[in-house]
Length: 152
Image (tube, rainbow, N blue to C red; front, side, top):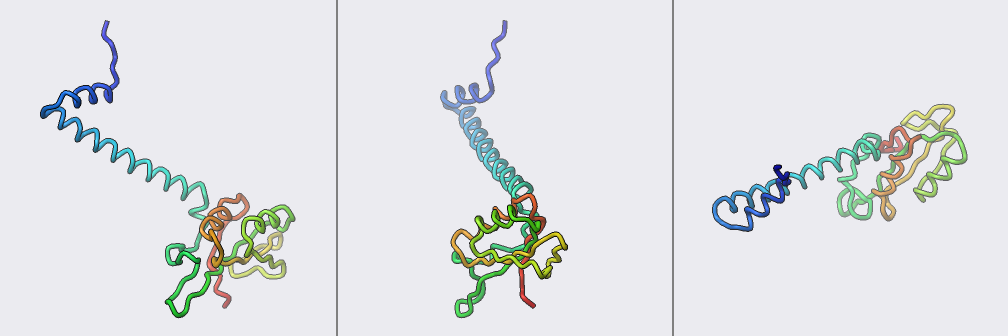
């Protein structure tokens, strides 16, 4: 009866013996490890973008510095953003717990166009952990879109 041995075990045994075959197998194992790592990063990024608000977040965070500010050194300013939530107490409380800068505006649809059964929320990035806050907001099931607010 033939014994089944998994290929990583065989590769490790041959690699331990030395020689040209071992060098080839070490190189293959290194490439396989590197490829697995790259695939894992792609999977995590894809999952994050699809499942944690990446498509909801219409704000370019790459332009912001560590303090959540953008612009030239002599003209730094916070980026304001807006989104809609249901006009209910529970979502409003949850959003304000996540984002201390969040302000609710029931009388205005904002540029984003909140419906009559929704409340406009405006926040800004000049706060600690602004990126985490935005991603948490974007992951809420009732937040459909977060866009930059220009106050025009």
